[in-house]
Image (cartoon, rainbow, N blue to C red; front, top):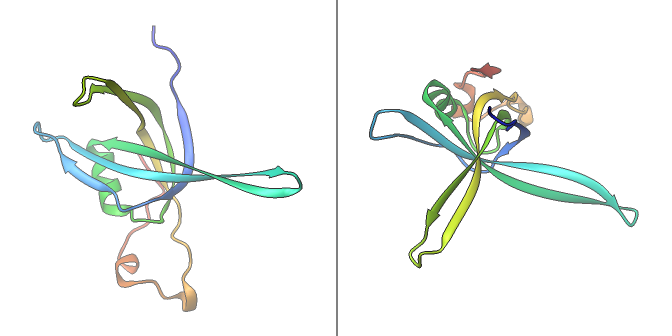
Length: 130
């Protein structure tokens, strides 16, 4: 029986996504998302930023690689995955990432004078990709 492993995050891409193919021909797209949390401490509003690595596969990877750009807002629904390996010194290290099963692309924010850069004007806005 599988245990529950589900996560939802919403934030903005830290950098442009990295789309590549595996040796078996499967597409994989990796990107990082920054999320903000605001809280009060000593009558001051504090901001906490967290960064999450996200990985998408197959058709979703292709779409993310084509549509996403640095700064674009996304909502990611997926699961956590922990990769483990040995470093050069034989020490076991690990990294947790999100494997996305669903990605929603947030609308592109308006630009001054309603003029977007040429690459944004040509881009189609997709709301939900499965």
